[in-house]
Image (cartoon, rainbow, N blue to C red; front, top):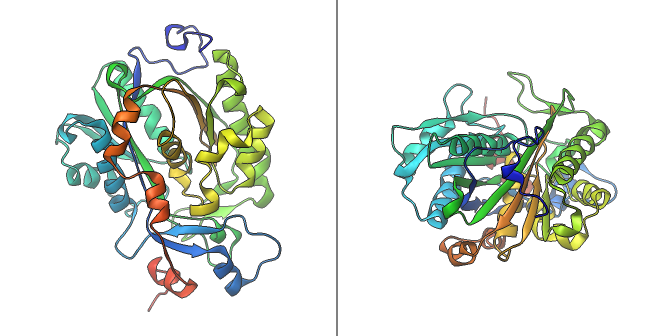
Length: 361
């Protein structure tokens, strides 16, 4: 890097922890069921190309909690620590199974974490997962605990017949944040940019979310992702060519490609983390699971930019640097591509059944 970011606390725009932190372990989870976009179009009709090829769908026995457990177990395998060493278990999602009852406590107990921890759920639309990650950085960075688990996970919530139904998918990722001395990946810097921009929302008792049509692009996604990514790059003295990879929130394939180009990134830099075309938009897990795909192939010394987006609206950016230990430990768990390759195609009727859209009364 061109500047020692973490040693410059005077850079007030950056979120600078007192203790240097990094990613100790990471894990993805994608359910095996896939609904092709052409199958949705067969039922509802569609003109032109599809925003994704197909999307991942949670099974009858899967929800945010069960999928978070799988991702967390993968993260623990790569971290090579006991769940008892975690000081926090936080889950970011916009599709928690309970309106009143945390998902985090169930996941914590299922993975064998101690009772002496912080646990709870985070919400900020699609950046709920990176919001939990920033909190984990703060906890470890303040010295309150050695390890904190942050998860971004969601299930499909698109209204039948709505444009969102083509992309709204299931899946996500888990990250264990810890001291940099034992990290697989250093977290060099983070920055957040937010505003009151209501492009996507769901009021209490509404079954499905609403969206502001083209308003979700400008001034929502592009304004926030662009500001977040360009600010962290300016503050650290880095440019697009300094990075091996960049990962952006991916509600579809076009948005991340457009923002990447505007910031100076090439298609080759973003391709490994661009999973929306093959598994859809996993919402709170979209940027996080894209990063897992990059970490599965990244080399020592690679710089990675990850920028999430959440409607309402906000964007979190992170600059990451790969360490030697990553290559040794990423084989401890299934890769993201392993989950993508493990697919079973379903039809629209099966999708409705799995998502509970068929109501008997």
